[in-house]
Amino acid sequence: MTSKQKSLPVAPSNYKFNQCGQSGISFSELLPNIGSLADDVCLIRSMHTEAINHDPAITFFQTGSQLAGRPSIGSWMSYGLGSVNRNLPKYVVLTSRGSSSDAQPLYSRLWSSGFLPTEHSGVKLRNSGDPVYYLSNPPGINSSVRRDILNDLKLLNEERSVVVGDPEIESRITQYEMAFRMQSSVPELVNSSNEAESTINLYGSDVKKPGTYAANCLLARRLAERGVNFIQLFHMGWDHHFKLSQDLPRQCRDTDQATAGLITDLKQRGLLDDTLVVWGGEFGRTVYAQAPEKDGGRDHHPRCFTTMLAGGGVRGGYVHGSTDDYCYNVVDDPVHVHDLNATILELMGINHESLTFKFQGRKYRLTDVHGKVVREIIA
Figure 1 (tube, rainbow, N blue to C red):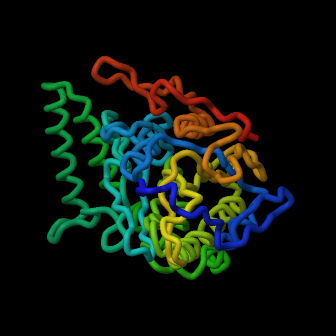
Figure 2 (cartoon, one colour):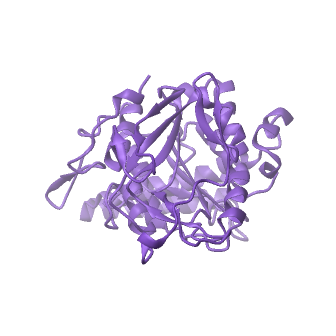
């Protein structure tokens, strides 16, 4: 990405790394809380991708393709697993923004169902006002009237479905019914006033501020225990091409305790064995600095980076793969984006080669024609 890369200085980290837990896995001093869970997590240090810029790279992770328009991984999971909770969506998205002024934008196609039925799209919960648009009844409309409106609308949709035979109409009926039930289930979901103080303390002080990463981590746990199959948290602000020494500690402060708190909370409630936590980004960062001065940053680096997993049948206290001494290339056990997605599906009980959907005459899947399950990380 940066011009004249050969002239840029190779620079070590400004932060110390400590060996943590009985496994002795190294974690940065910026992540002390996650480091304390070293024996519960698995690090894949040999991740790699072909995508070098944000849009194609994050789209690749989310959909298995750098091209827009494919279903997201959460939509595939919704399609493959169904739901055990009729009152909440099968796929929920939560977003937060770090303190960095140059955070990359997010867009709804990252949680879109693509060519899958729209009932499998992610539902984004808002950080202020109604958690979901139009959740509250409009002025002058009570729940009884709203129910009558939906009944009439359902009859019209069913009549139209008989005429045109479009399966999207059935999805629309399902979504309207879900929206009505969410009027009761969502307010109860987002009200965390009954959480014990000991639980609140796990996530840190920001947990009481709606829209923060910490608050979203607690909400993710509440969603998981209510049977929502796929919960995606996006925390923006990691694109540190400059001001690294200022912004990276802030981002880690925002996410370290809350992430550790989520894993700990799930474990204490007996949910971690059945819940897979995946923590990472769309690519890595270069070993060379983009500027020699103190506040320089790092460029995009798709050749190797780390992804962390916990729970869900993953082997705790284990490091998979390695890089060369300069963290420039993968040396052992490379794991591609397709391999990670195949492994996530496997851990959720889905064969990635069997989860297909026919569209425009071709059977598609999340891993396209690629992907190999990384069995070494499975307990």
